[in-house]
Length: 230
Picture 1 (tube, rainbow, N blue to C red):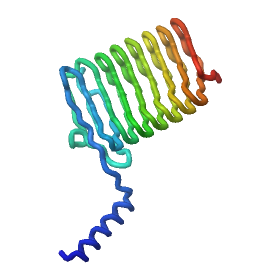
Picture 2 (cartoon, helix red, strand yellow):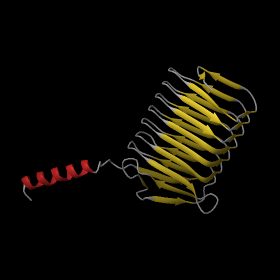
Picture 3 (cartoon, rainbow, N blue to C red):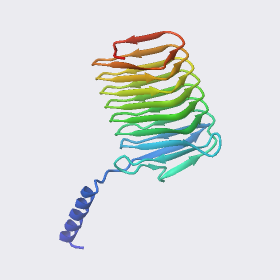
Picture 4 (cartoon, one colour):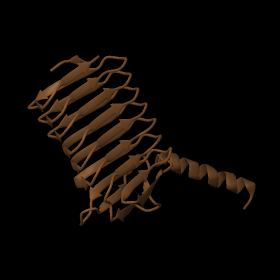
């Protein structure tokens, strides 16, 4: 192949890739370590969905398309059995998407962490045996929690950026703490029960809390540096 032919071929491939909006695909590493399910991303944009398998302690981890198809251990999806401890999801950098739901029952802690980027975390129809932690890094992030039951303490913390946190139809047996980082953030809570303290902390920027109604608080309610608008 001549150099001229190679240039033409390279140019044609680049044009085709642009037309299809080609985006480098991220890959998730999924391992079972001592009964704990660990899902780790890379610095590309990753998408992951975790659903309940056919048996207790079995989970299906599926890569989502977030501009490019995310693979899981190099495959479209993997099934992991024998989960008896925590579920840890750490997606690092990139514009990431996390979906946990469809009846997922986590034996112990559920910990979700995203890094730099505009991330979306959705928890729906999930039972957590012990503690729940959601941490998003710098970026404009969205966290949605619906129909979730937590046996221990819960903490949602967003980093810098204009973030949105919505919590509905959920039960938190102990403390629920929401920490909003710098930026203009919005938190809403509706039809939920908090058995322990409910604490909200705002950062630099204009932060708002909307009480959607139907909430029950077992102990103290403390809201700092956040405007209550409903």
